[in-house]
Length: 118
Image (cartoon, rainbow, N blue to C red):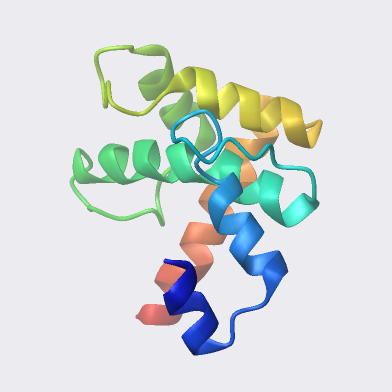
């Protein structure tokens, strides 16, 4: 992967963020330290949970997804079982955010991207 980054002229801060986002999952055990790294780490598992949640909605959209609805899915350990709640919480903790704030910010970011694609 580093060869691809080098060929594309990707800087070291982006390379590090990509490696950090898999903290605790790979042999590249580089702890997120900078804000971008922490956000990427926190959002990775959470966006998977959100993706699974919207697939269950009639709209198949983030636009009508609420934090309250996502929290219900989060609490159901059988729902999207591959999305680690421990990692999501750890990401929120790394950022110094509560879980609800992380969920809200992530939903809003995904909604913004979805609106832009319409």
